Amino acid sequence: MGFRALNYLHNIASRLGKPPARLAVIDRALANEGLRRKGTGRATPAPSLEEQITLLLAATTAASPLCWHGNRKEPTVKEGPNEALIWSKLPCSGKGGDVFEEVRRETLGGTLEAIVSKISRGGFERRDAMSLILNLTTDTATIQLTDSDNEYLMFSSQQNTKPVDAETTVTIKGRYFVSLTTSSNAETLPDSFQ
Image (cartoon, rainbow, N blue to C red; front, side, top):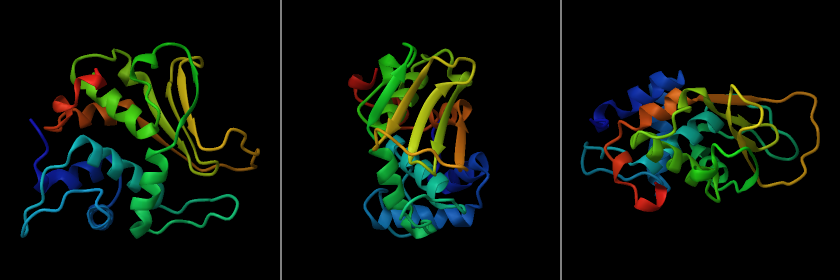
């Protein structure tokens, strides 16, 4: 059973602990930038898996006060599409262990889609121990197993980041990605995601 478009934002908002009104603004901004399909009239189409991941990245990186390093300024809610693209296109910069090898792709967005697709097909047994950690200070992302220090994928546009005194991170647990498998489009990804 897939998300009904009517309940889409409320479902995501409750899982992320964000206000639905704020996610509605982000969703509208994504649609205006061509990252979310627009509906006709008042009808909003059910989100694809890629659209759900884009909203997740936009909501977690642009919808709360952040501590940015260097010359990057804190993004506003309406800048969510740009932030989501930056995060989605982060290249894989390192790995440890073999658990994630089968779902590893060139970018964070592609890897997240592959993980959700594998979960929807009944794979990825250790999904409950998985976490996505977005380090908003150093612009790095890590997908890791919380019960192992050796199983991870790192994503970063910079090979060497300077150490910082304080970091702002967002952690998204594996159960959130399991909930994305209820999307009607999760099962219809190309076979290359198997």
